[in-house]
Length: 465
Image (cartoon, rainbow, N blue to C red; front, side):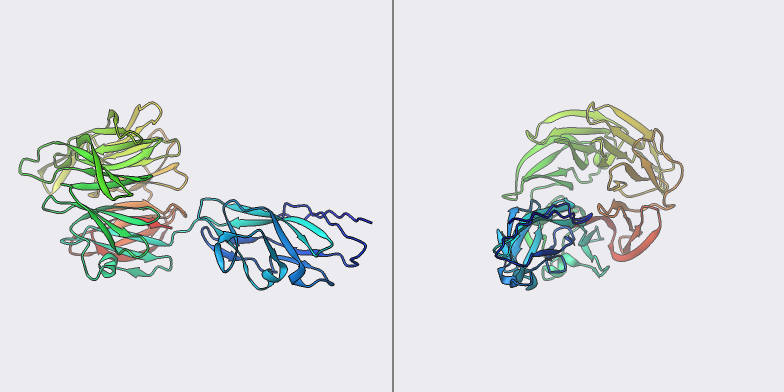
């Protein structure tokens, strides 16, 4: 005779079990445990009998065989000795010996599963094993320090252990170079833009795993920022200081990341700084360079590398973020007046919001500007709250119709970034080029959580998974 049983396995186990038992086997196998597993994004977890276990009193574990009927999608179910090869079957003995593992592929996914059938040779069970994946965690925080004569990188790990001069240490004492300005990372490499005082800037390419030197990309006059788009990188390039502080249009260089070589250049406005990408378009902030009197954003098609349009905004745009709608928020520090130095005043400073779909501009005036950094705007994980600096740090919802008046943090800093996982703010304290700087960490509720001593003139933090 045939006997059929159906089980509900609880909240985490959205599966039904079919059980078939022949007259030749007097004992029915039992799926006694099917709890699923939880692991961190990109991690590997071992499946043990505490998570998956079939009990059959008259069958050895080696004879209880699982067959994978629907494979995992966001990782690999594998044998511990071959982590890259997906398995199609395994035994309860393999599970008991901690030989079955799940390897998450690092994608931004929160769940996975595999369906299975399991038999003792006579009877059959079916089910689904659920996998819960935690959010991808930041493993390393890299602080870029401009320095006085030579810049440096500070590495902070998730245990809050600080390693200053990280690049130099990894490369036998070789310095990073003068005045590094910006940094970006992909899966394999770290890219650091270094602006020298003699008009011969470069991009230092280091192996991401240990920051050892990989290549130097040269041929820039005054490189400022870098943005990665697929197999390409864009580097904004200006002109160094001269006696006349003359305004001069400059360019964006295109780098092929497969060959690490410059493959083209795109003419833009004067003194290009920060770049962001929204809906296949590269937005370039043209600050005016040493003249500080440009007020445009150049928009470039990232497929063709052709200029689509030039948009007029507030004066001296230097920093940008993209919100959840794809709209571009541009921080414009304004045209400075040094006639009463050291008292400096700014005109036409503000935040301009470019609607991506229409290229229309909404601008807000900034007053009481006192920050001296160029990295003055950041956005939260959900991309619906913008943080910016003027005489303090402010937090602004993207749906607001006017600038906030309540100070989020009653201080200004040399740079501001947001941890993309937990929304903590990382702000750079840089008083003098000959004094060690600091990085302070605040929660999204403006509570100061910790601080670190780093190199001279820290300007930004890059977060690495």
